[in-house]
Image (cartoon, rainbow, N blue to C red; front, side, top):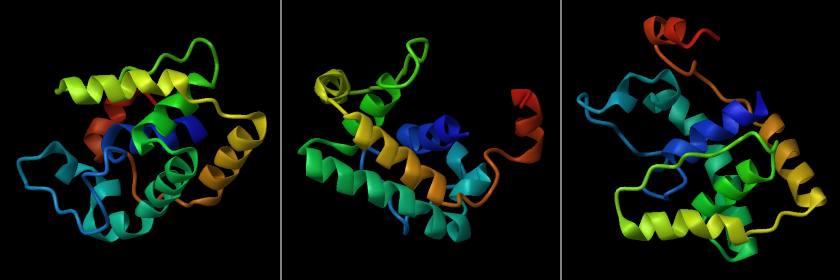
Length: 132
């Protein structure tokens, strides 16, 4: 559960382009995701704020923290981040250089588990397709 919760934010928020006031256009897929409704986004942004704070402490970017965290999980977990720009690709590659101690990993999990994410992952029709 922790991995899925964190992955949601890795994928959509850690570039720093979105915040609690973000509104997605109706043509944007994210506008259909309940977790990104205006009401739910106001609550769910707490996780993003935590990762931004952690990135500042480690003097890196939130995207690198998120990817580094995934890389520190099971050996069979392979993050596949998207990158439309060379700068994003370089940023993603830099996650390999981020070291997270066992204490830092435990702290991240503690924080993730303490945050209640509101709204389901997908609209009901799409959720059925995930098999979860």
